Image 1: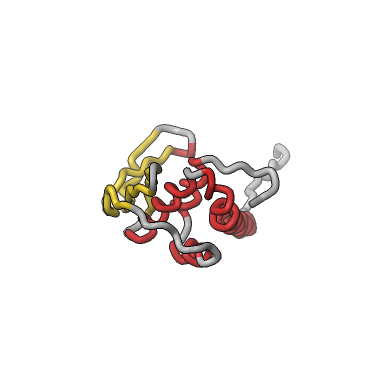
Image 2: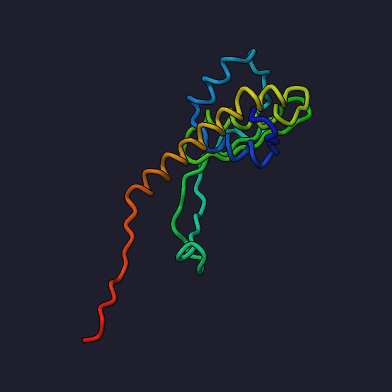
Length: 149
């Protein structure tokens, strides 16, 4: 885990929702097997309306629909929820399972350090790389003002 970095539930939910199942599964190999979960709401795929804003801060408009998969599980006294873009039901279930486990304070630090923090770092590196690529193609337009004729 990053020194001094505190992860709250909204943070790990966001990180898990954006992570690829292959990345999560690779990191989970470093841990003992996860406990069995009770499936309360099986992974379901549906759509949600995505809104945009004109110019990023203007009037809202409906951009279109996105496919989302959601799941709810129980482990002990904790309920785990997840929403993930796409149709991967296993990703949604695994993210819900991790959410439930992360609510258990006895397991939180280990899971944050082994799973959540590396995923967060990888996602930040991907964002930085994308920003650098976009910045490399930036074109600054300027207008030359000619003197009066």
